[in-house]
Image (tube, rainbow, N blue to C red):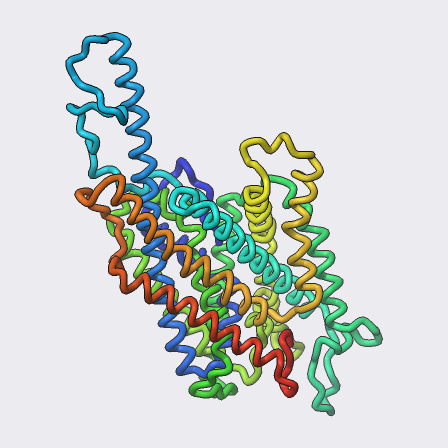
Length: 498
């Protein structure tokens, strides 16, 4: 869930902890149980814990970079104020005994007055602004490209999850009990109907596009109350899923028997985990309004520990409670005729959970993507020079049409999450924070010197951690690519998108 737009309102650090939890725990968590079972419960546990730790490392890099960006902007403001003051003094007192240096500062005026306030988080500076401060032009272009690719993946996952959930709810065909037939995408949707479930999925996908696509043309903002409602629904849904899976285990025993270790399941689990721990792009808007930031890093570490435990509980209970896990975990709780009315209501709520929460997020993500595409290709300082068709039609269409086309030809959420997390997600979560903090440290050292302490400096400040994260990122991307190529070229395999 995106943090609320509270530029002027502040909240406590404990409230921020809740917001971080809601921001991270989202769609990616719904794909975890399936890929966790494919990788094996032991290997899956190790990977979830390891990826949670590395994600936490790069979160501290983003926080340090935010403080560095605030320090640089604060330094620039002081320089301008001093130049203005010196100019005014020179007008009214041309015989000043104080010598003015060539850079516009006074020899008798200390440059770093109130230096302890340089490194603060009092101004919201987005990742794009930090990229403009600390990256060169090719670096900024690469940043926006990776960011847009990640948002494209986000929108593809959202549209597929919503359309698939609606199709699963409305398609009422059930195979004959006397046969061993199972429901597949090629199965009919309704009795005495020729419409298949995959065709129904595409029909709902087009309806989803026509309903929510036009909102990208406007500046739609989430309201605080809408976020609170979706937050409550999210906590309720995940708690019910864990509770029902635990009840199944206690009542019927383990129906699923995942392997201990399965190397073939690593790519999907890696992509799902990277996607599931993603919060880096929203940290500036989330952390800046906190009133007391004294224990910020401690609270973030506590949040990651809580989220990691939550993911393990969700994945372990799901992997052992169900014999066959669907790629969207909520679909395992589809309503059946043999359950009582209360359980059917609960199952309907879980199945419709992605529809409610993701539909409210889709327009916001699409607008964010549209704005980034405009920033990448157009001059944002002179947008009026461009034709209104370009600004108000072309770029909104560029934001929503590609994700719909992607999900029109595949409904496989595992592959969508894997690609989004393994490539664009790796860049956004690992590489960009690492290169940001490296360049931010160099820039602040050159401008402010080493005498000013950054209270928000990452505890992983040694160069070893920067090298480790970069090598880890490239190693994982290579392994995932090799596995995808092997899977796609294997004549006996199921193919790339199945």
